[in-house]
Image (cartoon, rainbow, N blue to C red; front, side, top):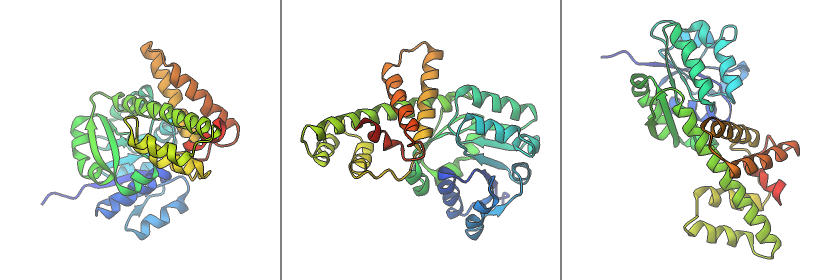
Length: 289
């Protein structure tokens, strides 16, 4: 009988919380670490092990996942004292599931592989609910053999995974998806704002929209909530703006005009300035209404 794969997980925020719970519910051997050690306690009750540093997780586990907030945090997690790089050695595998840009993913890959480690990026499409339900979409790239070895974990965390090629392609796919999502949310918010001011019933607008050719699950989910000023966080607005900003930067790199994304980015920036950055990203409705 082959030895059971041991998994590490670094970062227990909104996304990491659900992802780790899915791994544990699936019976996997998981060791967790977070900057705030107290956050590890609930997972220990569910069967997880803990480590005192990210370095220790890497050393103890065959494959270590991470999910943090942005490129700066992802790179710091790798390079900090007692971080990922300090624990990497030949054969150890690291899978970053954070949303970063292609350049960041490539830099992390270079650092990991230079020490003999294996690297795969696997950003996820989905927010708090899909993370808890194990229905994320996983966008893997880099070491294809490693991505294949992660499939049992991917199947617990997501409903489908893709392998997209060389390092950076996973990040680019995630930025494209989130940029489109932000533009669509702005369109819904503008339509609801003008429609309700014109005397139309907001719930009816959402119903008609959802049943038509332009309907999307996001409209049906977010529309009724924004009409009730319910901005309980599933995907923080400040993180959505970061993704749109990085998507626009990808447009610059590809010499692609992105006027709708640029306008949407300005709305998100204004919403953050108004103090809504920690609310759900649907809170741009507050800015537009």
